Image 1 (cartoon, rainbow, N blue to C red):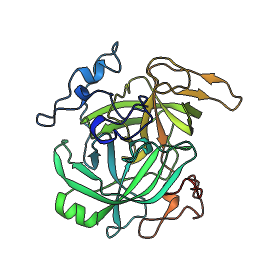
Image 2 (cartoon, rainbow, N blue to C red; image 1 turned 120 degrees about the vertical axis):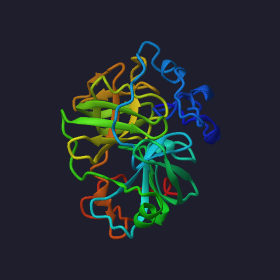
Image 3 (cartoon, rainbow, N blue to C red; image 1 turned 45 degrees about the vertical axis):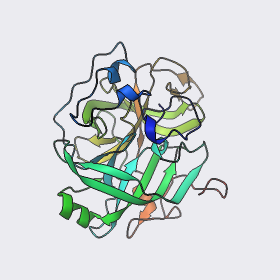
Image 4 (cartoon, rainbow, N blue to C red; image 1 turned 90 degrees about the vertical axis):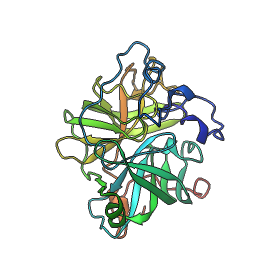
Length: 304
């Protein structure tokens, strides 16, 4: 985990570099005029690694935030007339990292997102009116409700949303991690699953572990992880063990059912998203009491 990219979240008092959400330096932000990615962005995080090459996967439906990546998403049963949703990480929330155990629902937001087309060009700007759901407990996700419906977005931009899969990710399946912030695609496979993934104060359940090819860097936080077999979103990118540390910021560790800790230096992870659709009912309405919904629920203290 790395601290969200400069400029926007300076009010976050956590102070430590966090999640995969940033490279931690102003120089690492992409050149907005040229679309180029400075070489320092890779070397600053993985000085011993070769820069990742861009693949030919489609960027359509992905978004760039001010500090992270994300995607315009729909549930399997969403309708064209439903308000659109943008998904990114919980640690990319503009008001700062949710604490362990905190769940935020229906919080006002005016955040904007740059929607990308197939070739990573700008298709338009999306605007949120609220944070529907955000947490870093058990998973790492924020879902924003937009001011326009899917139909309105597609009519004005030509871009359709990505669909969240309602089935568990499959070990061995090829995946693309598509970063709207960096306009890069990382291609690898699902290596397996971590029973528990711990990083500093946060613990995530049943996390996707990448094969080594996906050397995600700062700014890729919130990228949709697309199963290339189905074309659907199967997870959301969120962290990588950068230096071999154990269960600390930037160095998540795996913990199995017996409590055994495993460190995998240079291995990245994502949080599964198949459980999200069960928590959204008609009209893209969040219902944490819906049958089959297992997302963490807010307490009186954590809800905002």
